[in-house]
Image (tube, rainbow, N blue to C red; front, side):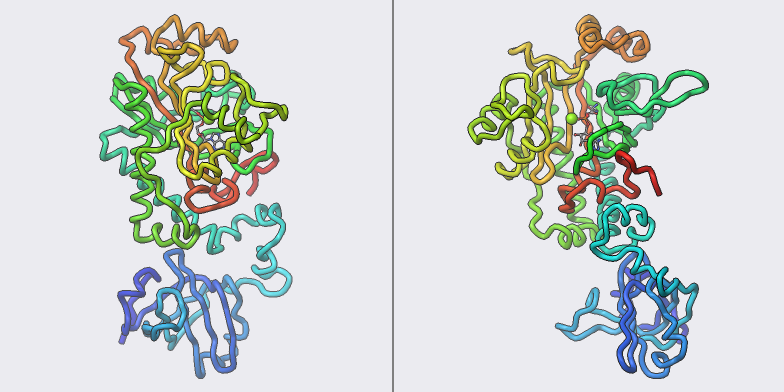
Length: 441
Ligand code: 4AD
Ligand code: MG
């Protein structure tokens, strides 16, 4: 019978039928009289077995890993206990080579050898992406973005696309990437927050999924120079509503990823012990975190006891989160360690209505706050930070033309993935990661 062309993901529904599959040779094993090919087409992996004349043909000796081929044959369900992806294999009766990949020194396996120096693997990222775990993380990433969009869609929050080329800062001048813009000074955006705020009176609650850029000088497990930033801005709510919304978005998005027929099983494979977050998250105030850190003899950046106003740096934050072992909403940070736009707490003007969401193994995956809605107070914020408000006229106008209580947050896509897929670094969660000294391929 004439074979119908399928993608590997459809092989399970094609048992006992003759099909044609094209892809790349992911693994190759030659045994006397038999050739086993694990074929990869981006939709899955399928073991193909060549036997008899097919296996002995001269051509099979030239086959190499990563060659592209088309294999035709009948899909066979394997007896219980025989291992192959999905418990099925393709018994080939014909195959053809589309393009051979090199052998010898230039062979694929030499270029992306397992356990190779990470910087060599990053140089060969275009090839390394073909590996099982990196490609799995990218599939989960796609599902995560889809799930986040679904949650926002279900809650009637409108997607917008703010500009990447801007003339204002959001998160401090020290991490701005500058660029020449027709002779004017401009920057790559650090956050779309300010633009989202301007959309509230026009579109209601809004979100965006946009690249953010940070010239982070330090090499850490969780900092990229370019990352995919999921940000939302919501109007007419108080701090408690705001916290509940963040929990809901995170919990539901993760739930949808786990329910996804492709991504769910991949998460299981990458992170078998993953515990989905449960609402409500543990709430912890900044001042209580300091107390916790001091009780557990975890020192601040200067090696001393934490005192009010200290930043809780990455290492201490992660140690605390890992010890506590559940998602934490860390709230009410002091004014001086947070950004110019954050609203003060009514009951304690030293503090802000701010929150970081901390997850075990990664620490901060989300940062957000209620925003200053009073014009004068915002001006004082600019002054405190030494920012000239003139270029922010479009932002400060929001406080003139019908100001409202509002708040928003940013989710780091790669950090969520590092937590969800149990990756040591966010670099494993970005297609082509950018960080200090790395802008290729
Ligand atoms: O905490 P951040 O800096 O907050 C903001 O940018 C706010 N303006 C967002 C808002 O309110 N709309 O960044 C938000 C999140 C962090 O929690 C982290 O997950 C991620 O973005 N992030 C990074 N991810 C990778 N590499 C970096 N260099 C990151 N910087 C922040
Ligand atoms: Mg932050």
